[in-house]
Amino acid sequence: MSAFLGQSVFITGAGQGIGYALCSAFAQAGAWVGLNDLDPDLAQQATDAINASIGQARVSAVPCDVADTFALEQAFQGWVAQHGRLDVVIANAGITDYGTFLQTTPADFDRVTGVNLRGSYFTAQYAARQMVAQGRGGRILLMSSVVGLRAHRNLTAYGATKAGIAHMATLLALELGEHGITVNALAPGATLTERTLQDDPQYAENWASVSMNRRCGTVEDVVNAALFLASPASGHITAQTLVVDGGWTGHSPLATNHPDLPIGR
Ligand SMILES: NC(=O)c1ccc[n+]([C@@H]2O[C@H](COP(=O)([O-])OP(=O)(O)OC[C@H]3O[C@@H](n4cnc5c(N)ncnc54)[C@H](O)[C@@H]3O)[C@@H](O)[C@H]2O)c1
Image: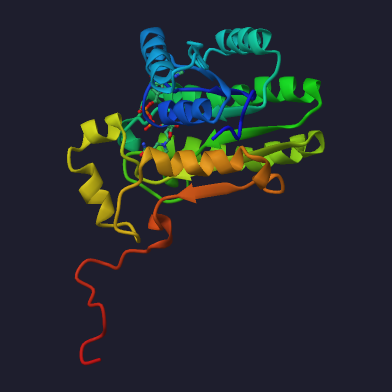
């Protein structure tokens, strides 16, 4: 597949998990990929692994902290100087901080909003400035979550950032539409990654049991949605949040012990 041949794609938070799978898929589809991560060693290892697996040096490590706007802008400028263009950006970097609302500290709050909201906002801004200057349009994808759509205990700050990111896609789509830039968000449900498996060894089985399609999400599920939203086929789709969750958010669980049918029916 060479659907993105010669395109320049920049993906944040991509040393592992969903971001890594996104970089691998865009590189296999012929793109030049800037693989960002906070951890420089992880970014380089991920880059080397993808390049080795596809047999071509299509991916470059671009490490920095997305919450550090100065470093992020430098990273973008370096990437664009190297490739002369930017076609797709995916603001994927995000951290999941569990904690009760009553005990969350201002430092906890700033950490999660700094990466998730500030990082996504300025990733989109630096990308959009380049895309507007090029005059050829572009694709911006933001990474929301089903936690931005449905309440989860102990994820208040995280969920607020993900709801904000989904609405940010709508707001940016309005400002950038006249430049031929589409802006959409992806909202994955429970997705099996190194991190989620480490948090819960039964993660896949547990989430399969509450998904309409009876399976847990995979990184490929998110990748397939991203490839579509970054492709010419989705040119008239903007300001949307695409939920990739096997139907989980569409399901309203019954109260415990509620019968499936009233007695006698
Ligand atoms: N896995 C899921 O179930 C799931 C569900 C919904 C949404 N998401 C979202 O998808 C995105 C990726 O999730 P994942 O599960 O692959 O995450 P992950 O934790 O496995 O990987 C995230 C990567 O981002 C990097 N990172 C963290 N802070 C950074 C920063 N400040 N700057 C640059 N890089 C940074 C980490 O080093 C890590 O390599 C996140 O935005 C997450 O909120 C994930």
